Each structure stands twice: as structure tokens, then as C-alpha cells.
Length: 336
Image (cartoon, rainbow, N blue to C red; front, side, top):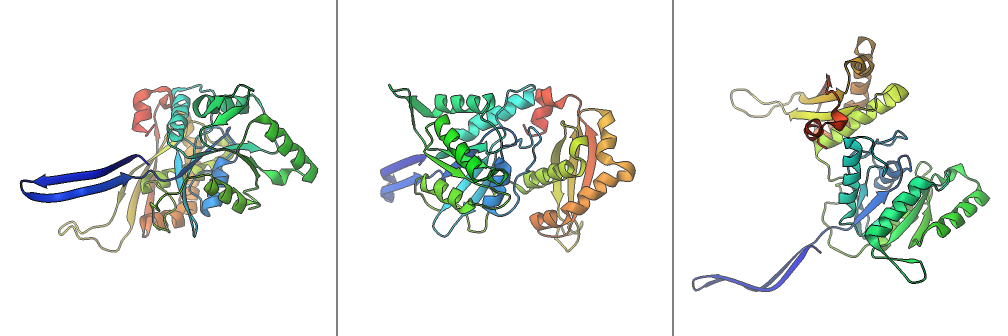
């Protein structure tokens, strides 16, 4: 709960407007997913929601914003926050991404720490744990930690291990930290997803439903389309894709009669700017004969139509924003 007030009264002259009134402002229940780049945060949140709302890729800094998915069951509603991978920043963008993680963690009810089953626990995982302990735990006299909010270990990619290897991994993770719970899962194989969902819900406080049953994200249509475009380029170009790619939806324009201003059936123009840092990167994005742009448009035709509620014309413009990852003004322009 953010704010609660009781026994309030208000009057204008002799007229009583409110007598002994009460109100409260609730903060909806949130679970933040944290972990290194490639730990499987976006893949897991997409699997739990049942639709793609976040880009899933092993490339560093794939997730650049806190994507909030809304998980609604028959008895609960939970906001899942997909955070950027925590890392040592090399650019101002990298620092901004770490700041996004800090902001996302400031008001959550439970933290899910993702640890891939097929990877050793390394220095990066230890840095994340140390950071979480500083912010959310108190050290006891015996050296253990008492968490102020639940910390759940989600062991991802268990399909990569056999039974004995998984048992050994769970023992290793249990010794790594004082977790409130440890849950193994394979999001790709949809193995044990229901247990992940139930554990996260069980560790969050009760509260009112804040969103309609059919709403699956807090994101604006512009932000969702921008992420879809960036994700489509990730899939289309793979290793060729410049790391400095950024996408902004400039406008969504619904057709209207120029004289009356009334809407009519027609194409919805979605204007998108695709930014790179160097002129030499533009041909990579565009492709020979604009082949890459055509492929991305074709791939996104159906999801973009669904988002805007009609047939859309996706207009992609490739632009250069030199050195944008370390330029404060450019970062602000691009939404960071």
C-alpha cells in the first residue's frame, strides 16, 4: 500500500461533503526478474504470460527497459518486471540500464534471481547477490542473511541437464545463498512453469485486482511496437546486427477525413525510426535492395495489426545518431 487515510471530513460552509471517510492507494503486487544477460528472464516472462511481450536473445543488453507483464489467474494477479541484465557498464547507456534495474527493484514484493542450470555460478552472479543483500537483507550474527522481501532462485534451462546433474545444480544453488525458495524450470519446454507461477504468487501479499483479465502488459503501443521491431532485426541479422541499434516509434496515425476529421477504414500509418551509430551500419540494417526492411515488415504485419487494432502500414526509416550510447542528449531522445 502506498497511502492510507482514515476518518476524513470535508465541508463547504454548512454542507458536509465527506464525513468519517477513508481511502487507500494500493500498489499492485510486483515480482522482479533479475540475473545476468542471457539468464532467460525474457523467455521466462513470455512463457508465463503466454505471449511475447519482451525480446528474448542471448545478446548482451537485449532488454533495455523494464518490461512489465501482467499475469492473471483465477485467483491472483501479478505484475512481472523483466529487468535489463545487471552488468558492469562500459557506456552511459550501460549505466542507464543498471539505473533502470535499481528503479525497478525499489517497489517490488518479491525478487526472482535467475540462474541458468547449464552455467557455473560466476563472479557476475556473486556481484548481483552482493547488491541484493545490500539493498534487501540484514546480516545475522551467524553470518546468514535475513531478507526483507522474499528472494526466489529460479533455475532456468533445466532441459540442458540430466537428472543427476540437475540435483547437483540445485544443491550448489542452495549453498550459494539463503533463498526463500528454489524452483527449476525450462521455459522453452514449458516444464514446471505452473510451479514458478504458484511460488511467485504465494510469496506476494494479497491486494485488489488492478487490471482487466485480458490485459497482459503495462507498455504503451509505441513501446511494444519498438521492441518488436528491434527483436525482428535481432532475429533477421543475428551476428551481423550492430550492437548500437535503437528503435523509436515516432507516431501512429489513424486515417481520417481531412475535411471533417472523422475516421474511416484505411491503413494505419506506423512511423518508425531505426537508429545506428555509424553511416557504415545503415546498409547492414537495410540489406540489399531493402531486403532486411521487407523481411522485418512481413514478419511484424500480424502483431502490429493486432496492437493498433487494424491494418497497419509499417514505415521504417534508418537513421544515424553518432555515438548515441554515450551521449546524454541522444539517450534522452531515444527514451533512456
